[in-house]
Image 1 (cartoon, helix red, strand yellow):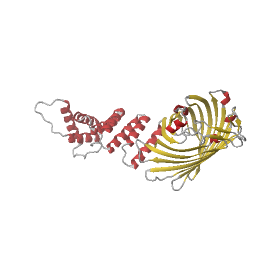
Image 2 (cartoon, rainbow, N blue to C red):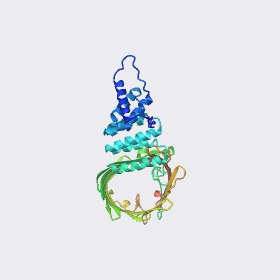
Image 3 (cartoon, rainbow, N blue to C red):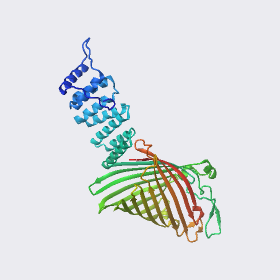
Image 4 (tube, one colour):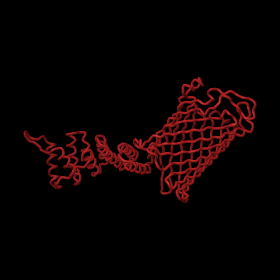
Length: 469
């Protein structure tokens, strides 16, 4: 086998192989007498090592492989032999390390795939699930066909189910016409109020680039045939780089004025309930904006997922969150959220998703009292369009603040906002690197309000990286 490719078997008996191997190893270990000459070529030694391994003579195979490494310390074939021999002897760690060297020194993709998969199997045998996942991602870099990539993805999914630890991370860059959710106009007009205000440059829409990062860590505490319990930690960061025109419009504004961070710890238990699954979640965390802590929160929720048959799944969720403002109890708030989602797999392989949400917020500060309703329709295409897979979504929303004050002005009848956003997501599956693929999201939309301060428009393009495993 050269670089993972097996050499043709030679017509030599197992007993003759062992005798020849023993003689060879003795000659390699001892300095030959003056004038002595060994006429075995490198290909013959490779054939000898392979046949010894096939015959189960692991000691001879190891000695022959070490002899090959004396001639060439970067010989991947020798490391393949060592890896196989150590695996048969039960030396799993040594087998994995030898496979790692075979992966490093192999010079063709197929050999790297074979070596990487063997290293992953050995890591799995050691119950080092995370290391096995890393090896599968390294192997995916050299996969030469879609079928091979799909097989690696399925193996990775199996490891994810075995591994008590989980990690996910996403990042995106999004050029946007409105990074601060600012007003579209410099004038503030409130329906029913004869006074017109002038908005500062910071309160108006500012263009720039938004960078986000979202990291989630999880650990499974317990699992049975019908239930699972785990803990998690989520860290989210959003940073803004204002454009030159935005800096000219709001010269006193800094990028850090629009940065936000979020941290959350969760405890979640899921168990079978009839044909579906019932989940209970508890969470606590903190939010920061512009470098300052804004509020701490505690949240409890219950959700239920039920298959309806014919590829349809109904999900229901209810949660209650208590927010504790770091600026005093005046800004504390309690919100309850109810959500429902129906997902339907279609006969052509596409997927249709319909979601509905209702949120009610009660607070001491009148401006924070609100009711919001939203609806979302999503459509994911099952087939690819060239190198791209597509999904699109339309989101509609309505919010009502019954006792809203804009500065010292009471908004007649309260403030009402309407929102509409359209998204088109593209994933470039063919640009796979270690199981990660680039994505592109186009978004357009805005809000309409009886207080023009909250009328916004946005057009953005988001570039991201996501895992296909």
